[in-house]
Amino acid sequence: MSEKPLLIVESPSKAITISRHLGGEYNVIASVGHVKDLPKNALGIDIENDFKITLEVLPKKRSFIKELKSLAKKAPNIILAMDPDREGEAIAAHIASEIPSEKIERVLFTEITKTGIQEGIQTRHPIDVKLVDAQVTRRIIDRLVGYKISPILWATLQHNLKFVTTTLSAGRVQSAAVKILIDRERERAIFKAATFFNLKALLLNKGNEEFIATLFKLNEQKLASSGDFDKTTGKLNNKKVIALSKSQFATSFLL
Image 1 (spheres, rainbow, N blue to C red):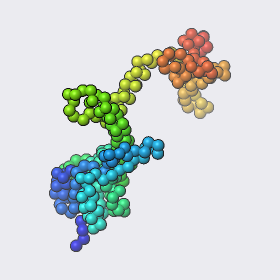
Image 2: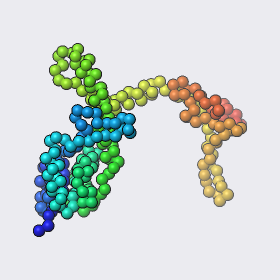
Image 3: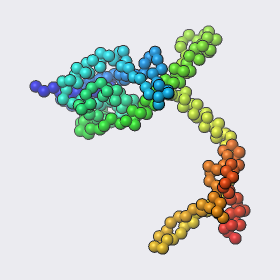
């Protein structure tokens, strides 16, 4: 008797439901979340080498990986059915790195119903590398912020605030996101608008077809665009271009 295909999901409860809806034709197991992560006691990110990361099997998942490899040897194919999101795709990629690549197939279940599961199992996809990269990027930011800044909190705030009894953390990717928002808001607050004019014309070619032409130069001098102005003063910072004022525009083209 041939072995059943191996189907891997994240949640144990989903594994039971999916197995029931597939009529027991698949050997369904659950990873129970992530199986790999950055090392606990080291940065795990080579900042000088294009932010290359080091992943380790989580201690609690070593027995799962051992069981997975044993089952993978017997299964004719291995179907990765993690959640259709960034974290799910990363889990699929991490598991795929531990088993024979020629057996791997990826499916997406958008709903855990009999119809949704039966439809999903019919369509196979490659692992979405872009989603995996997105998860890796988020995890890198998490680690760099938490690993580098949290010790400062421990040495300052926590040392001086005696009523703090829990370990302080600088946060994860949210901290970096908040900084980006603050930086952009500061840029917006000091931004000075500049007013300048250009000219677009609707013309006809020899075939009597319409096209739009934009004035690029006036008297051999290039016209200014938005990038030629200082964002904090609103003044022209490129001496090689000319910024047409309303009066210059009217004098040159309307009279």
